[in-house]
Image (cartoon, rainbow, N blue to C red):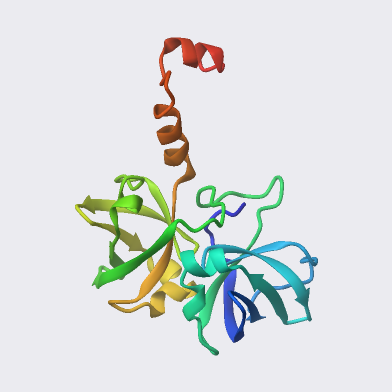
Length: 210
């Protein structure tokens, strides 16, 4: 689990395909001293497991499933990526709870500078749109952001100068594709509403909400 607060940037050394899977080697811009083999690091919002490391680099396997759902398959040597180590128990949650399980990709429609901030308009398909709500949370390439405005087929987020400066989103251009993880709460609410019984007073009492 992560918080969507990027700790630093990494630089892609190489992406090597191995059949339908891949191996990703990253030069890390964050300390790896407290990272052990088997630990998780979010790379542009995708949770990956560290399989080996040196003082300044780490390697992670990327499954065919992850490649199909994310932009990781298009990474090139030298490209910068957002990095976040997994949340420690008792750690500070500055963004929102992010699982690192990317729901899909979306396209940046526009970039607009306004009073120093960067406003991104993001185009999404319907399977993602149903989980996006105004003033709700969304993770874009692993960055926790608030949805400022929602329109049919698109949403808008505002990044303050600091967020833009310390993440790889600053380099994203119109037409670029980004990883999207919607708020997990919406998925569970949808699941509960689809149960034959639905949510009623009895359900809430049974599960301790009343």
